[in-house]
Image (tube, rainbow, N blue to C red):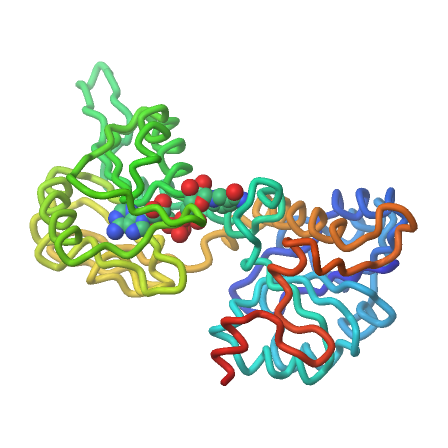
Length: 376
Ligand code: NAD
């Protein structure tokens, strides 16, 4: 069996789909690895590090994928990149198929088997293959650093000969994977923390990280998949009234609230920003799906009445070394799901909910129901 690793071509992408440690793992399983030249360079993994683990370096994408069974990548392929893939090859990367229908059609027509990793089912067994979780961990950590950097204050309490500094007050909205990492990082930096999520199940987790969990009267908003449901108008009003008060004295607010498949809910309005202290900052991790703050602009920092509103996108790519290590571990674990334990050959078992869950195209057909529906 042969696995190929492509170099990322999008200008803002510095991660790589497989790191040298992943090569070592695959080689032990008797799987050959070919890496496109300089694929890991921006993430801090030079070609020599891959070669040291037994990979072959190919001069370009076409040479890398030639004869490969599986091709690994971080970002969705571009229409040009699809051109180097051959019928029957399995591409494993992110895709967001319902937002990338043209690429889905191209992959389908080319007979490429597409495995879109963000479709990974949220079951315990699949945690080690979940790119959304691993990359949200990176984003949560980095959001705190951005927030800390945007305010003219210390986060921790300091007692010095030049006076005592009070700790910064923070609020974290949404306590999923990213939000909990935000709290863990704020805690390490000594900030005071409040947190809120519509899923009361996370209250204990927030408290165990040292945060005060804000509460409002609300029914349980967790769906069967462990995700949040959209709030009713009445519940949303209640949340907004509570948050209007909560943001007033905060130095850093980090928002991570998302509803799968929908635009992110607006939790901080213009008026609420106007009620905040000048010099404070909001880091909106939902910027890519519309933002949790009304004033957020994806990829930009907006300043309103002295409050900075940061809308970072693709934060994981700003920490490519560790983000790639985690992404690579997710992909390698998934690759092993496709290898038969007995004869070590490639085998797509459609009874395996992990494989069935992430497969978008196979043998010129779209298998992912929402994507099929969107294509009409
Ligand atoms: P997400 O990115 O979809 O959303 C982030 C958070 O925003 C969620 O906690 C959600 O409840 C919250 N939110 C939504 N609307 C809100 C609102 N109006 N106000 C405040 N908060 C709001 O979520 P996620 O980080 O992907 O995780 C969701 C859950 O799935 C978590 O419990 C996580 O542990 C679980 N999970 C399980 C697996 C697995 O078992 N394989 C993998 C990943 C995540």
